[in-house]
Length: 429
Image 1 (tube, one colour):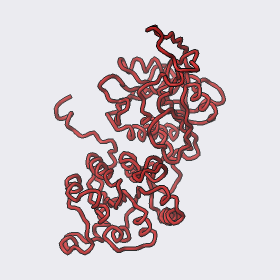
Image 2 (cartoon, helix red, strand yellow; image 1 turned 90 degrees about the vertical axis):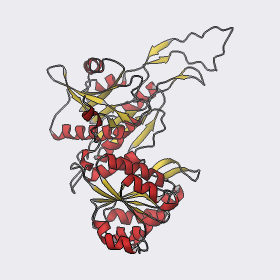
Image 3 (cartoon, helix red, strand yellow; image 1 turned 90 degrees about the horizontal axis):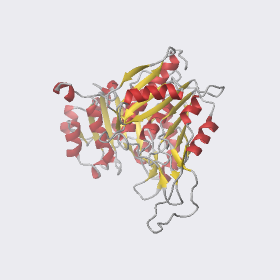
Image 4 (cartoon, one colour; image 1 turned 135 degrees about the vertical axis):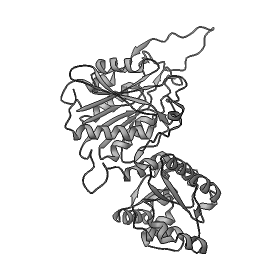
């Protein structure tokens, strides 16, 4: 690879290259995430103009916003210089998409009521462009009937929404109201310009059922110790989110993870491989199964009922037994076999060779192979480099190499590949 190739930007979402975004940053602690969003949008080749509300400026500085957006920051509705150079009407209509992140309860209420008492609310009322909001607020505020009513009004006007997620809130409480992560918002922005999701017709995976596994499994040794692995669940959760975004009725079976539940996805939480197998079998039949979980290969045969003690320096004898092969079980021919079964191969060496062997051995249709060796940062990281292996009726596999992408982008791209697979009328093995 040449030096020029190494420095050439790799776009996770090529559709964003050249797009013009107007970002409204309202007052909330989640405003710091918007700085990351600006940087990510700029990395994708998009231009970003920012309206910073008075409340937003309490959490992020105009200087930081200007430095990241490489443009001036718009704050005051009655700024003579700003209005003479670019009035609020032109500002609201010069973008391809208007994004509000964070979207506070106050600003959402103004949008629903059609109020225009500052630059942000005035620009939102004056725009003729699509609008995407990323709500962020206390859980009680999000669940309040007034907010629910406002969101219904905005949805009826075509305003799209990403999040909020469920998790720990800035106020110390736990619940819904946490603003979506920058990568999620980035994916939602890209969805506006994705030809698969444009138009008034059905989404490409509407009417189809999907099953995704994610995260590690935890195999107990005794009440306090266990066997597990370094999987974070980021990739599996991103895939489930992307399938649901394209219209699939998606069930996510997840081991222990800190990842937020993907919106619009049914989540079944498990710990052990045996529990994961039972949950997967209970979720069948489906048309799409993507096994992204890092299932422990072995479990302890006899789990101790009490904490094992060190006794005179002697090591306890742990007898291991093999866990069920969930991917092979789902791929087994029969009436409940999904039309498309996708497995994952996490390898540390000879990635393609080992993945090709696994594809034949498991009986699945596709394998997503990646390198998780030391130094790759794949386990627990935000980015991934994968290879898609598609089984051929005559034997062997077609290999497609993808560039390094964020895990959110890998999920989006894989979901699109699944949609294309069904749109082409292709079948599994």
